Amino acid sequence: MICNCNDWEGNMEKINGFIVFGFTHQMKYTGKPFVFCPWCSKKLQEEKEERLEDKIIQENDFKQKIYKECDEEDRRKLEKE
Ligand SMILES: [Zn+2]
Image (cartoon, rainbow, N blue to C red):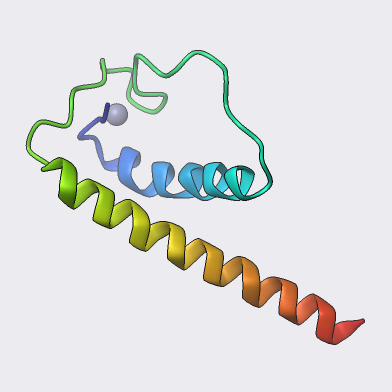
């Protein structure tokens, strides 16, 4: 589910960062999913225009980016200690 407003993309990117971070720490969101956009209050729409394979590739790229950033952060912390 997505919204096409200007706030959606930039803000969801940040929220997804936390989701992936939680995922890497065995945490899972079990609450009710969004029905309306939290920024513009419009009802969220199905992602019809995106092919599922493209979405999976994008998500994997994003996860790899986050994993890499997490690793780098860990390494930096270790170097300081
Ligand atoms: Zn919106």
